[in-house]
Length: 174
Length: 163
Image (cartoon, rainbow over all chains, first blue to last red; front, side, top):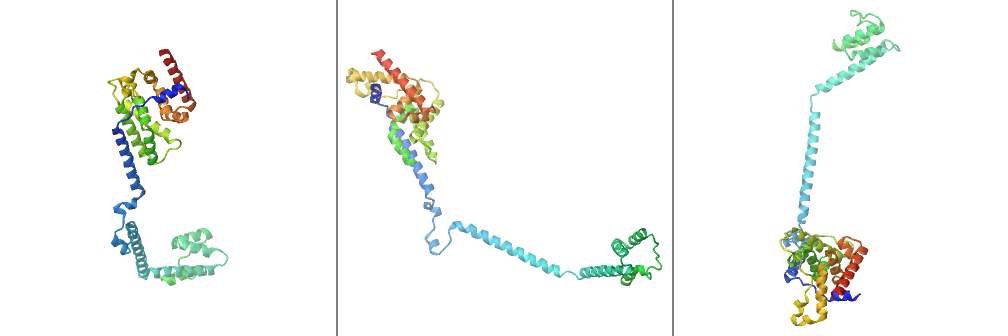
């Protein structure tokens, strides 16, 4: 250290007033108090359990909203299950006419397929006719005439061996 | 961190005030700056990396610069950071040669550029290293060392000239 530096060190700095010390100390103290609150939230009265809560074995206050959420979810699940069961019961209680119609349709299709198979095995006519009947009888006839080049005889078609399906239809529908 | 700040304040309160006074040129503003700096420092949750001393000095300097900017300069604010020899020893001691030289020295330091005064205050009275001062001023430590030496040379020349 040079002489000049030593001389500079001999100089006396102006001292701040006590007011500055008090202001800064108050800031530091306030920070310390705030830090204690942050570090120890359990020390706050609102977060502490009372003696009665502890002796009754009550859950902490923070778990109560969770319990409410669990109850709400259970209720929603029960309502959904009940709705499902009611829907199934209503479905089973529907009028039987619809089911009969479905059964009749299935029986008709089955008999029609069987009879069509008896017409001309291997010719493919039966399947074509069966397909065309699903459209309409008139369309089926037109389709058959276009594909075979023959004329469909309305008067004799019920007795024609080629049209067993027609006999089945007439037997069912009259 | 609060404990460290408290310790730093107790250790460097006078130097921090002098640094602020060097920037503001007004004792009242310097006290405001120190207070404002510690308010800002106490808001921080994380301890800064590196030298905490340099960080605190830097905070005080920045607060002092802010105070100086806010101040409407209707008068020349150039209060000395030193206690004049006459103020502390009385008129009877004014004849002392060394005290006169110290008084001259303080006047010469006050006449230096602000950056040079800051470095002298932090180096001589705050015992900060050149790197720490560089951290405060935002300049490399080597640059701070060069400025410090130049300031000392300039002071020596002026003292020799006056003698």
